Length: 330
Image (cartoon, rainbow, N blue to C red; front, top):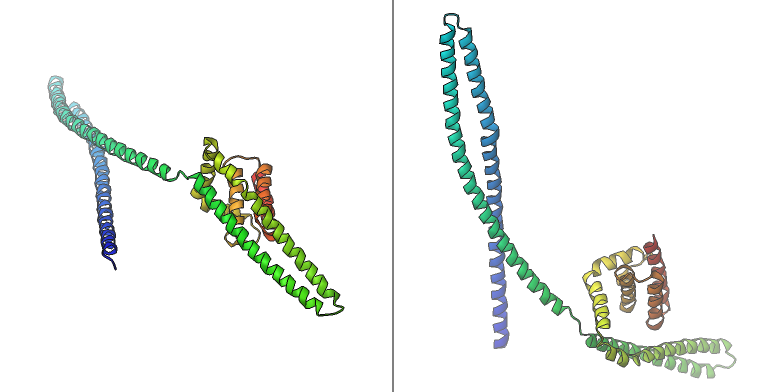
């Protein structure tokens, strides 16, 4: 291993170790915050219970005690009315002194609660500032993601052109093999006199070979449009449209494939050739994301299938599009 590779491997190991430490510390911090929050909530519940419910019960007991005392004083037969009034006034005075003392304690509690509220307000401010920093960080990272997601349309066309050329080359190779096969059959049939069936087979194979050649020539003719497309790729509307379609597929690939699978009768999207899959995905995006009229989207998909798919692929795409159309209408 070269020194540069060793150095890169060391950096990767250090990065993973740092990531592990950061994730572990974050987990500990969140666990501690969860416990602190839980304790704070329980503490506030206890304060509210002690300050409101329990205090109210105790105050009611105090009032009942003094009410009973006044009743007992009035029932004393050995006391004159004046003596009873004195004792009742004294009980009332004790009660009022008790209430005054309680009011002082309540004021102290209120002052403490004000300090708690101020602390909570300060805590909310800190949390808000932290959330703002996270939001700013996320916004910055989102912008970077948008920059990364800005596809170069010229590169897309170049890649598409390369794929199409390679496809045509493969098809031409297949046609060449078919023609060689037909040529061999013709040679063999010339050696067999009176073999009409051999000529019929040769004729059928020639038809197939010419059909493939016609398909390849049609595909090659499409490549003539690419220079015009590359020139028009500088138009902002076209760039936005291409970016929107591509990003819609990439960001929703799993759900798109899943919903297409649901309308494929006894088949799975992943088993189709890549070109067939992409045509169906584009049609789905047109219908469900771009609100293109279903008939228009299906016609565009059928045109693409006629250019780039074999007979079985065209039939499959037609059937799936019909079912997608029914699902959209329903």
